[in-house]
Length: 213
Image (cartoon, rainbow, N blue to C red; front, top):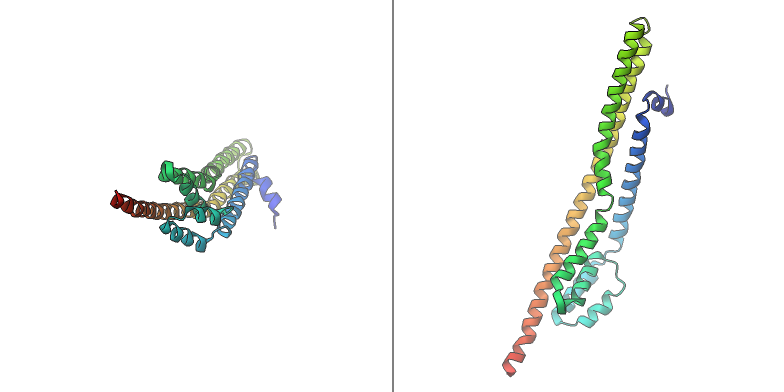
């Protein structure tokens, strides 16, 4: 039975860039998985609902105190919006949300590139293997079939390796993209809620002043 190293050697020189692709892919997947686990642990949903409740009363100072040091990305977005409410609450939250999404999308382009490049490298190795087989066939004819099968083995190994890397990478890639989309939806939902609460609070505070005039 062949060892992994023997199979790797039979795959030819293209196996080295494929090995690099597999290492990069695995590193990105592990880094993103740890990132999302850490992000989920920082979520504080009770505090998130409490922020909206306090915002209805217009007690902005209490919100600043309660959200100080909080690492929940949704709460941070709301806190930034409240901090800049006198200028542009909507723009401030939009900018903070973009920063959060930027961190979530980190290395996703690398993973997408590996999904595309790995099968192409596999096909490239296949072509090289077939070329080698035909060259040996032209040199030795059918007297030495093992020389020809070596090139065919190279072609099949590189194809399998390239497809394997892409297949294993596409599942976490789609999962991470789904998480990004879900996070964007949550931020948009709570940002809209805070805008509505803020407008309601401002209108409520404006009415007594108008009546007194």
